[in-house]
Structures are given as structure tokens and as C-alpha cells.
Image 1: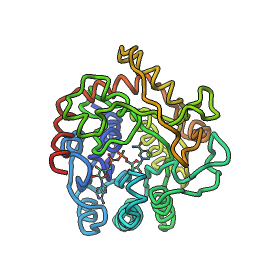
Image 2 (image 1 turned 45 degrees about the vertical axis):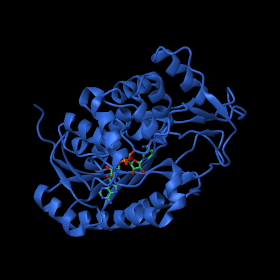
Image 3 (image 1 turned 135 degrees about the horizontal axis):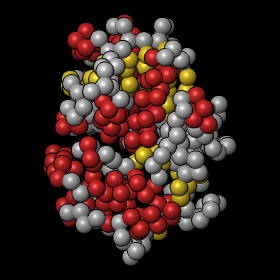
Length: 348
Ligand SMILES: NC(=O)c1ccc[n+]([C@@H]2O[C@H](COP(=O)([O-])OP(=O)(O)OC[C@H]3O[C@@H](n4cnc5c(N)ncnc54)[C@H](O)[C@@H]3O)[C@@H](O)[C@H]2O)c1
């Protein structure tokens, strides 16, 4: 048994990333205290690694009561809405949740003695960057309400006196921890890797139908100025991302100053490279993606420069694209995953 390194508040810890980080925190000797409204997440994920309290981050009385009960030494903030397309259709919903409720959450925990915050932000704060890989110093020009609401929340966090914070900015997260009973369980599912994997693993027809995947995966554009013509993006295995959050937490507990770190996987992966890895890992040499034209506004290459995180936090990703695909496939085959999505689809 490791000694108890302290209670850590994890907002949004019943969601994808938060539940994996709670698992990693527990393995590192901390006690994660998950706070989640379950507006998107799942109770089974929230209860996996420590005490779970259901409630809204915008409910100051609830947040204060959780702080009073557990006396956390720091908070990791994940609670947010994450769909870019939905944020364009319903910007007020994104600003209310991701910015305004986050501000209430930060102010309330600060008032209740929590002076260290790690915020799971996003590289969407940079918009369409002039230079890639993108350094932390790049101009912040979000191109959708999702990115703007996260940037506003970062600024609200840094404006609170007496709080030291780290904002972690990253692009796509993938993979799972099926051995811990955890994995990506989004409904709807818009992310590339689950959308490639699910139709290739004999998923039930009702599941593919619910996720709009009956026609298989569609590749947007093969004429980009990249190494193979398909768009290049940054992907991090969720357990590598969890390691980064624990390192950022240790940095703050150790007295580190307020900071911002980009997290990324070096050269990124093109869509064709992901398709080739899926063919190999899932033993599906027959897999051919349907090609459709480029989408307007999709840049050719988006990669974060994580030199600073590597130097100051000692972070490095260890799991590559094949491990992301294999662990995602193992998770998407589980009854927990399939039943959770079918239940959400029926309720929608
Ligand atoms: N998934 C990605 O690829 C990705 C990429 C970059 C950044 N991020 C950031 O990481 C964070 C987590 O993303 P995720 O994929 O785990 O999302 P998720 O939807 O799986 O998890 C978010 C959790 O927050 C909870 N939540 C939302 N609003 C809440 C509120 N007002 N009060 C209490 N709980 C609330 C939801 O119920 C859910 O469990 C987000 O802040 C997102 O901006 C994610």
C-alpha cells in the first residue's frame, strides 16, 4: 500500500479523461474525489477509483460541501461540454457550462482552501495556427465557441488571487484502460479512432446504427499538402495524458508557478497512418475507408509542441497509435461499453 498522498477533487471524473486520470491518481497514492453531474458521464466510471459525489460545478453550495467533507489539497478540472459542432449551434450553452460554471467552481474551491488547480484545457484555443508544431506562445484565436469558452475559463482561473494553476492544452485523446474497466464512452461519438475501430470489430448492428456508423468510416480529403495527402493530427493515449495531469499536480504541490503546457505526440499521425495501423492491429487488411472531399476550415496539420512539458514536467508519451487502437478495440467490445451506449441512445 502506498501512503495516502492526499485528496484530489476531480470535476468531470465520470467522463472519459477524468475517469482515467482518477484511476492513475489512485495508482500514484492519491485519493480522487469525483464530482460530476452525470450530464454526460457515467456513474460506473465515476465510482471506479474513489468517492463519488453527484452534482453540478456551478452549484457553489454543493461544491463547498464536497470541499468541507474531503478537504482536498488540489483540484483537477475536466467538467465541460466537448462537441465543437454543437458549440457552433448552441454557443450560449457552451459559455454557460465551460466558462461561467467553471468560474463559479474555481472561485468556490479557492474560497474553501483549494489553491492548486490543474485544468484540462484544449489546443483548440489556438484556432488555425500560423506555425506548427504549435508552441504555448502562439496567438490564441479560437475559431469556435468551444475553444473560446475553454480559453475564457483558463483566464478566469488565472484571475483568482492566491491560486496557482496549470492549464494543459492538447488535441485528440484516444485509447482506453480496459484492464481497469475504463474507456471512451461518448454518445454521440465524433472522434476519429472510435469511428474507425467500431465498424471493424463486429460491433452489434444496433450499436453502429445508434452511432451513425453503419456506412463505415469516411475519410475527409486526400489532397492535403502533407506526407501522404491526408490530414495530420496529434493523438495522445489517455493514460499518457493521465500521467501528464499527475506530473502537473506534483509540479504545483512542489511549489511550481502558474504555467501553461502543450501536450502532443511529436510528429502526429496522418489519417492514412491510422487506417494502416487499424488494418494491422485489428487484422483487417481488407479495410478501405470511403473518401469524401475535404471539409471547409480543416487545416492540413495540427500538432502541439510539447518541448516545455517534456523539459519542466519530465513528461513524455510512451504509447503509440497501435496501442491506442488495440486498447480502444478491447474496450469497445465490452458489455459495459455496448450497454451504456445503447441505453443512452434509447433515452435520447
Ligand atoms: N476528449 C478529447 O479528445 C479532448 C481533447 C482536448 C481537450 N479535452 C478536454 O478534456 C476534458 C474532458 O473531456 P472528456 O472527453 O473526458 O469529456 P466527457 O464528456 O467524457 O467528460 C466530461 C464530464 O464532465 C461532466 N460535466 C459536464 N458539465 C458538468 C457540470 N456543469 N457539472 C458537473 N459535471 C459536468 C460530464 O457529465 C462528463 O462526465 C474537457 O474539459 C475537454 O475540453 C478533451
